[in-house]
Amino acid sequence: MDSPEQNCTPSAISNWSQRVGVFDFLKGWREAFQVGVLVLATAGLVVSAIWKWLLDRLWTVSGAEVEPSRLFRFGFGDWDAVHLVFFGLREQWFYGLCLLIPLIFLWALIGGAIWRLLACQITDTSNPSISRALEYAIHHYWNGFFTAWILPAGFGLLVGVMIVAYGMFMAIPWLGDLVGGAFFFIPLALGCLLAFGVLVVFVGGNLFAPCVAVSGAEGADAVTHAVSFVLTRPIRAVLYFLATGLMVWVSSALLVYLVSLAETLTVGLVSLGEGMLSKRGDADIDRASAYLMGMWIGGLYYVVKGAIVGVYFAGSVVSFLLLRESVDGTDRREVCSE
Image 1 (cartoon, rainbow, N blue to C red):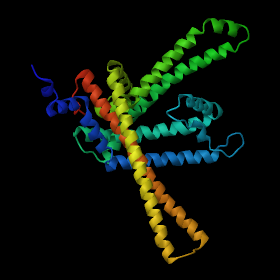
Image 2: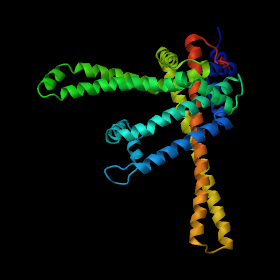
Image 3: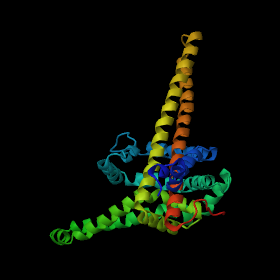
Image 4: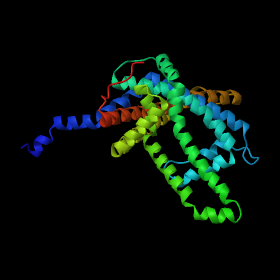
């Protein structure tokens, strides 16, 4: 019989790490910083920001010059803050549609290309260019990446509309109050179904698009497979989801600190050098110079945000590969060659 010391050898630890995917997550973390991923993610974030900025200039809230997008901001650590989203949809529902629908179209394309790049890089099957990844995303766009995003949202919308319709029925005097109260278990059951769906999508929603990117599955099949993986291996799914979140958190903390430090040092030293040769300059020129410098600094922060997005996408690809191998035995290195 092997002793406990023999069971804890470096080889055993290495085999355990290989089985649970530690090295796969580390490799995915590294591949998230490749140039193609950074370019696509940063471009998507810039276009998204421009679109939101344009809409904010066209809308007002209660007659005041307030950015409507502020109504849709909420913290992930505060469950009660989700009410802000419902408030935003109620007060500015048309704005919400105008904001979200184009972004869904945009990120179904850009996200699909990023997921394809990462799937090929992480599994060492190929090294596609940005153009090849975009071609794949376009080929699998409508019945793949776009459908994988829309189907869960459509299911939630359908159940939500049914609950809203029940509420409209309860608005009928006397009949709605009595009958609606007596049969309130119906919307309650629908609410439980919706809550379960939200929980599954929250944990496994990051697996839908990677299924299309890795195996070339259609959108409906991608959603079905991803949900089955989560329900079959719920503990693994949660652990991989937490591992992805940890990667994103660590990357955010390190990159934001690094860029903030670089900005402070650069601006401080440039100001020091400028002050040695010039005590006072033209006010308009100074404002223009500050604006141009701000553009470069803002662009750097968008690159950082793109890197963080790439880390999240890489974690989702690794999570899908590991869950697929655990559930149906498919080798994690197997990727469709389209």
